[in-house]
Image: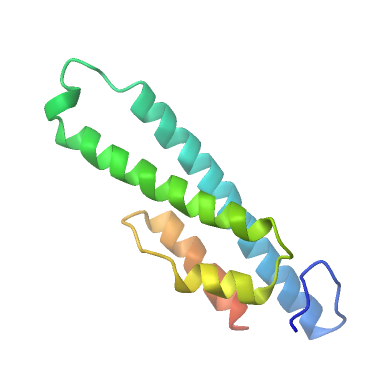
Length: 117
């Protein structure tokens, strides 16, 4: 059975766990911020052209994607946070055109594999 991240291993494992934890937290902060920003943007979108506006449709798709990732992220954090759970999150990641998000997921994936980000 895999150890939860709350335990502090010594030596290289400690550095690895700290790197993974840092990448995980950076991704969480970004997803929370991005979800909030997209919700606000949709909420304040001008209404006269909203029904036929392609930009609004794309904005709603981005918001849906960000909220779904945040939902999956939060579901993982409700249990013991383990490398296995994080690897499952990365494996199920559906890429988007958000370069920052993709970079943070790549950083998490690299740290999980023990490679420098």
